[in-house]
Length: 398
Ligand code: ADP
Image 1 (cartoon, protein in one colour):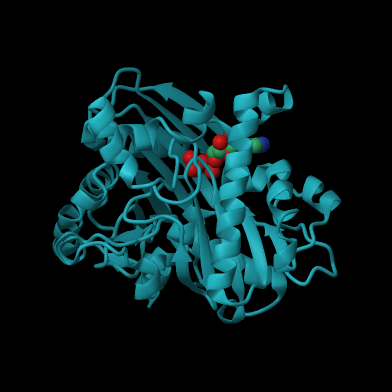
Image 2: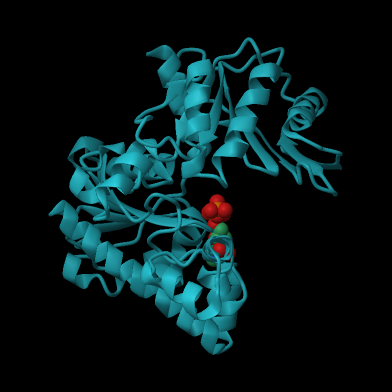
């Protein structure tokens, strides 16, 4: 990558457009921005470049206008996209189904396949698709690349991704585990191998991605072999507003005893559960502050979060049959030493010896296990935008 021209990374949701201009070689971020409240009142754009942040109220009725706003921000505050045009636009796409096992160049046929995948991710894929459609109009001369949250997990064996449900569900409706946060798990597992000083293809690591959404992945020799999220990003760990694992019988029970319909049930599981359901707040910092003040709901929530993590850490290590490292990432994983300590202090059976002072002092990439710990533990800040830029550039080069 001799010139290291930047990639414009786009993460388009139904009502927001997040963007970043990133050099794929060095990871240097030249600009970041967020257009908020698309299609709603009170739209605004925040653009940061050259060490300065600019927030401006804007009217954004749709994604088309959001891209005009994006272009105007670059024109006004830089960097000048005409002076050094991006080499590609890299789109984060949440669900690639079984169809997309790797990053792809977007053409009409790919776009059509993405539309067919909407039933698998009705909350996420439509926003991603809207972003792609308008980006093609806004940047007709640039290659558009799709990077999927699910692609990294397509290496899972059937034993890990198969749900034991009726054949018709599996064969006609795509009901299986797909997994998410793939770019993050991929990036963090490779950084972990680098910190161990070993090739990624020889390392067994459990990555704990703990943000508003949370998932744990077993990455064996560079490949995902199991992960906690499933058909949708609802399964597995306790998250900000999602509760993770649940007896599937709860749906039928609530329908019968309380008349809860499927739309309400879906909404409660994705928007009203998790930390929010347990404490009234989805923000982990707030939960921790309340727990410190002795709030019993916050105390229970923390204990439930830790219990689920310990359970999966053990399970994923056993699935791989060996373990070199456990790595924490994303908002909570990177910033909350107390949670890391609570989880790892119960992982002695796996051969992890926590270094409490290293854990407390961790800032950026850090080893938080003792030097003689048989299995290492790390904190690695995730960088999904860089990974997306890297994969987009690699696809074009290869
Ligand atoms: P997203 O999944 O939206 O990208 P993030 O990775 O930004 O989420 O993580 C958001 C979560 O991280 C929130 O629950 C927030 O409270 C938590 N978080 C962020 N900073 C800290 C911190 N310093 N200490 C504890 N939790 C933090």
